[in-house]
Length: 277
Image (cartoon, rainbow, N blue to C red):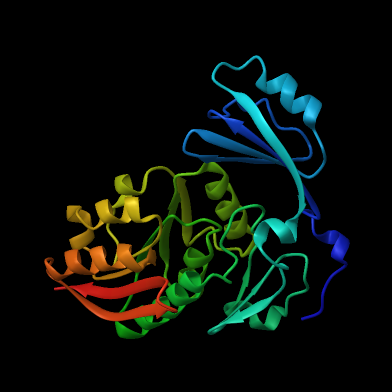
């Protein structure tokens, strides 16, 4: 796999504007160099590929409840925590679209444009989830997958590449959902993967053989209490730190489920793969 011209990476530089309040200016706000907005609680982060202070101020100032707190300039690599280059994880090669891909290995290649969303495959929990997915598909027929907190869509893409014909990938953040949808299109998997934006708990009653949640603990502890959770044949729970994992493990012990395998990365990150009775 040979690198394309590095200039093809559209995210060489990021200009980030940090706001208090939720930035929702409407569909008319779509400058050419605007990547999108990431909401985190009551704060918003606007991402551009070029400096746009004047435009941001002119847009933010008339909107009630919004205030520009700070702004940053960094490289895409600094934001993502490292170079975005092809990497091998299990059976898959995960590659950004600005690298050439061996078309003969399409079934084991995932083209992933992360934009400014986290989830490139390098985090330990993502790697463990990919391994757990492989185990799930080896254990039992998986005809439908629910991926909650999909982020870039990587786990949903992996499930579809493993042969799952129906995948629902959901994320609360609109920017993540749009990023995942872009990656579904890049991989030609629109017939297998549906991307939705919304609260994870609202999707738990959807019928699926497997639910994958690499998500915040505050959300996950509520997900496993839903009736929909117990209707899934298999589950993968990840993104948990030690004390959080201990609570989830304790609660799972009280439910009619079995933990088949648990991953522990340096005592920090934990992942559970299991089945319902």
